[in-house]
Image (cartoon, rainbow, N blue to C red; front, side):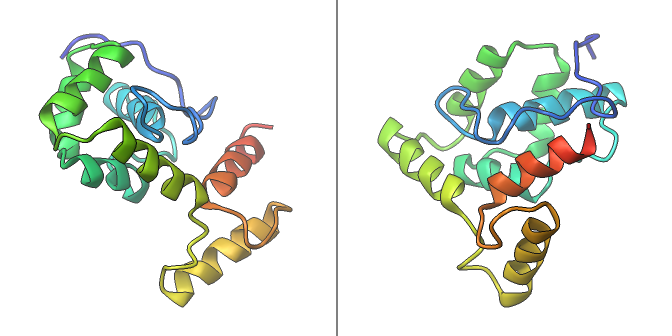
Length: 146
């Protein structure tokens, strides 16, 4: 494994899931967590988690394969190109539709207990209880590193 530069996620949050890399939301955050996991600085953040798997599942990329590629020390741009090349091919339009769905997800189509969990977390953080998962993640990151 290469010695890679990684954020210390015990001291700072990974990128917002809203940040686009290679046109895709979640990827930058996923890479930050992957690098930190490889370096042992992931803290409470988990790579290949359910959020990461929404992107990885959409692209049909295995988390273990992505982690191995990240561990080689590639840049963000190289990793974005790699997931596009090694996953199921998606048009820019398909990616944009997926991005919009992810950004708007407030768990309204999830089982009631998952929706109730997100509403409770949003309330705890002072957000609209019907807020999105991305809003929750950003607010939770901020609260964790005040």
